[in-house]
Image (cartoon, rainbow, N blue to C red):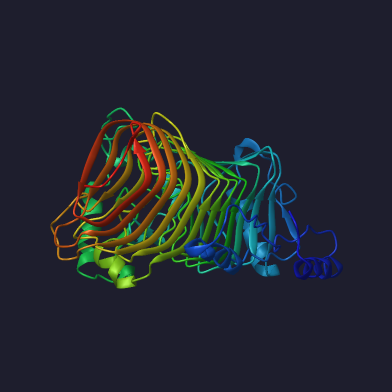
Length: 475
């Protein structure tokens, strides 16, 4: 990767001060100017320029040098803890995981620290829930609580990174973690404790405004943790790693700024195995990734109901490009935990292709979630086979049972091509709060079983759009 002069000088000075160290990852992003960034798209270079990569001190902490064997049998938890403690004491650095298999409990990163997996390295998380205690502050389905620790976690940190061509196995399967969902389509039914009672109680706590410190839902609550969560962090990088078998959502940056996710493979087919869910985040780049998931590939969120409105932090300034979406409930999804709003999302040059991909583009909300969702730009998308091409649905879950009407407006889709779909559209606003401004251009659906549903939309335009070989003209 190119290193700009400022960061090159920083690295050079650090090497002079600290012998036998690695180059810093605090270096310039490569920002190829793909396409023509004019009009609204001219915001993309500005967003990319604003995103800072983490600046990591140039010193290394090798896990094997600290005593880990990497033999796939040893519990390496203490060696990861020692490496993090050494980073904290030294003011940061790179924790290098050499080739091998390292079994461990949760890893809590600190500021100015990079966890780097060399090619051939595997971190295997031990699927024993008691290891992910004591409870930490986290966000679960859009609500803050004290819950099981995410497997890789950082809270309130600056300059944190997870990198390298190694593999991270969350250890979840139909015997561990996933059964807590209850009856689901991913695993055969088995008698197991489930999340339902705690989930309902957490919803109630959040609605009545119980302080987060008193919302303790860890041991005995069965609320599964995400694989990677960076919470209230700044300058975050997740790069090159393969993430598999997550208990819950795979990557979940929360209330964070300057987040870069690139060349990551997110492959997890359990219940709720979303690939990447930036929630209430600002300045985000997701590029060159592969998503192959049991739930949404990318789901942009901003909190659920009263808790989302309490924090009132939208997800904004998000660029997604050059990604591949395979299995999943949706390729690009906004919601449903979206009460804080979403704005300024740009997706381009993505391929969505799998018979198990249900929807291409999806916005899901309702009169309990509400949320202001606007200025969403999508272009140059190739879709193979899906159930629905474009979904905007105000009737998700609770539907029209609440006082918080969503505001959805300024949605632009250009040069989308789909080979086969059951329905072209499933678009349903409220008559009293219609979707305002859905603009389709230069897009073609070769085969669609039906046109689908279009209700409560004002300002629907279509220019150069065809379905089943015929011009689509909104009635």
